Image 1 (cartoon, helix red, strand yellow):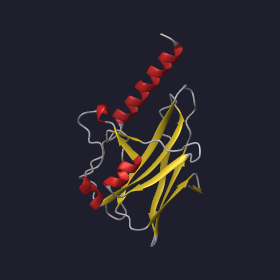
Image 2: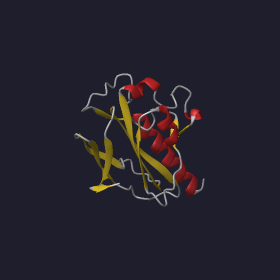
Image 3: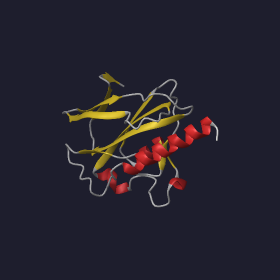
Length: 168
């Protein structure tokens, strides 16, 4: 087995084990109260972030308020699993929205999360999500999309994403 194949297999095993260990997100249990929020593990839905011009826009930020918004950002990948939905149920959006941040980076064998939520604060005319992005050490020969998805109460105001102290 070549070193490249061995490294690829090791990276895939690591990714699968991290995904399997994530706590499940139960959209029916999420109440969407004004101050509540929950991280949605990337393996919750059988979908993937669609390509965007990441050379021009290194970070993708989106507020998903409807199934149509979901379809603009995510593509279905039903082959990933037959028992997971491809996206949230339509009634989820009556009480909650999703904040999505995505970045493309070189794959890593590190299991340290790339994103860390610092705070989500609701103000009179806006909501501000502050998070830290730690690019993982690039020790593999392929790229992947890393995604942070947060369920929050239904938003009527503008949402600002602050990464490492800078508005994106």
